[in-house]
Image (cartoon, rainbow, N blue to C red):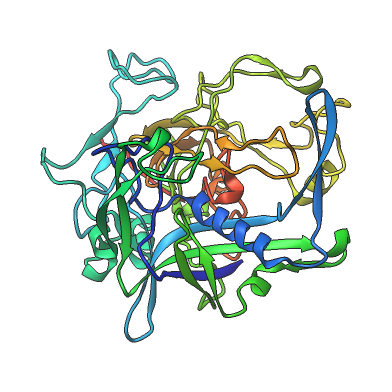
Length: 470
């Protein structure tokens, strides 16, 4: 994937669907979510007016008629943005959200760990008298005394993150930064505009003002994004091209966020053979063996993930769907037993499945797929993020007036999920299924474990290991 560094030329404005009226500024100056930069690149591709672009046909039912909607640039894949510091000597350091189980400032020492459980002796029995939700069986406890500290810096550098995954420590102060080290927040007052007349002080905007917060990124900091758009030239699958290098040869300009704020975009070399994301543990020898003989695998989110609720009902052509609460619990985990529902499918089987009709014709997703003997036992999940937006009219359908997009609650980056795997090979299979790089050496993004918005960079994670408190 292409590595792109975005440098704002002005303050940035990011808002979600929460109201901005009076003294309520909404949520307008937080670090941008992954879909923000994805939408920025998608809009830039449309503005570039490339020739020979492949159009994806979609048949929809609207107003009792069939309509074919040709959509472009569906191949766009992105990851990020992550804060990137460019030092005066040219050294580039990527930063990632602090894992929520390491709460000491200036350190990556794990301070929140799963506790050994007093139980009745039955297999899988939860803590006696606990309020743990199904299917969790371990509680998370702190090794530190109570404190009013905020839990350490929000961002840690590549070296510190790798030390965290390896169970090591680094005290290099340059590896730990707070939000205020990256950007400042600026508050401004604005006057509401009447959408009908595009004037202020009249109609629906009469007497209305609002407060907005803006993000002013400091000089040495950039927004780091990974992106590719492998497009079929004139629809020919044998002639594919990546549109990102054509969009950003070396330098360019991208409109990012609201109010038409511009960033200078620079496409740079990664500086190594792997992408600038921390690789996770992958070998059986890397994972601790628990007293019960199981292998301890933990999965830490590098980017937010969205797992929607699935009500009980039918899918296309009568295929039954099992209900799932979603929310904090991944949709690929059984909500009653905690069993990991992901399966191992080799590349030959994947190629065969691409030619099948997934909606019917006797399709069985478990055919030629090996299950992974692992289950979730604990989770450390912060408060959710609100993911929403606003869609403009497409212009090719009078019935499409745009409007607010669906609102989702996402699990924030830094959340930690703890698993037990039966044997070493099962731990390796689980790590291969959860690590963003899969079974590669960090050369490609293979897994995006968010049910929704994975192509926009949601659901990237890395695997580490854990020990229970005795």
